[in-house]
Amino acid sequence: MASRASTPPYPSAARIADSPCYPQYAASLKCLEEFSPDKSKCQEHFFVYKECKKKEREARLERNRNRSFFS
Image (cartoon, rainbow, N blue to C red; front, side, top):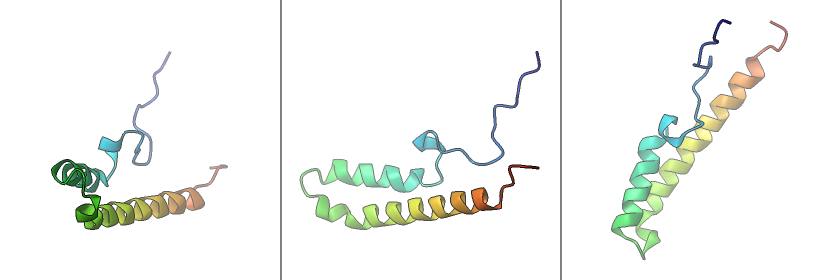
């Protein structure tokens, strides 16, 4: 039985570490650890991560729009 390639034809973000937004995610967590009770000091990190995830989602939707189920 032939095995299928384990890599999908598009970037997978099934694990957060595989996401292109992982550096922003990690920076947000690091900030939270550093300023634990005061989340307001991490707002810029949260914003950057949120914007990255938005762009990642838009790119995924665009890929799906351009994908043909019949080819």
